Amino acid sequence: MTEKRRKDHFYFLARRLGYRSRAAFKLKELADRFRIFRRGAVVVDLGAAPGGWIQVAREHVGQDGFVLGVDLNPIKPFPWSNVKLLRLDVTSPGAPQLILEALPRKADVVLSDLSPKVSGVWELDVARQASLVESALKVIDEVLKPRGSAVLKMFQGYSFQEAFKEVKGRFESVKLTRPRASRSSSAEIYAVALLFKGGEG
Image 1 (cartoon, rainbow, N blue to C red):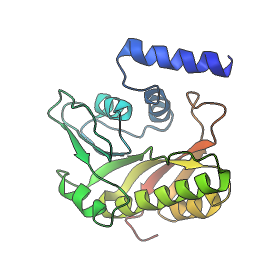
Image 2: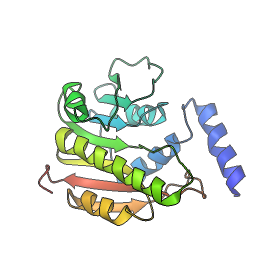
Image 3: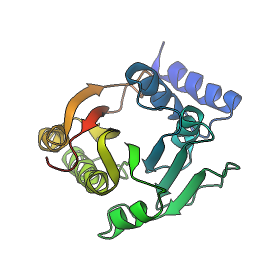
Image 4: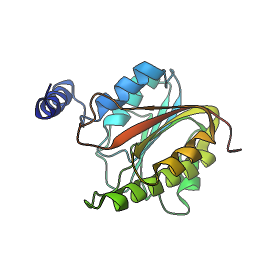
């Protein structure tokens, strides 16, 4: 399947199935492969707009779970009472505490699809993405319960190894993978991190 056809396939499939973004299929694949979610889980989604990952997380945790979507950009509200939206800059110093206060308890799963505005200057974009991973890890240290799981978007290239080392230091198991719905032209890769050590890394 060509890049254009794959893009069209996931775009139109998302529209047909009612997902807000084609990115929903990335998380659906990761959830099926790595069993990230369980019914009744508490989930935090960083960089949640427009809400495709929130929809997938809500499907998996059910009505007894809880999903908090966090983004600096506004997200159109959902009809579910167990989905909460928080408009917040994840990179701000007080963000981890504000996110924790918005949860019913510590999270079982933290998702991060945070991504910088791409400048076209490769080294700069990779460095910015690594900085966003660092911000996500600060949230994880504050809100994720021991033995919890995380999914983090990363960019391959300069600064990747250092960011990946920081992720590995916090979890017992970390796998790198690239979902089928990722565009072939994208350098994105996802770290699926299992069994959080509780901030000791």
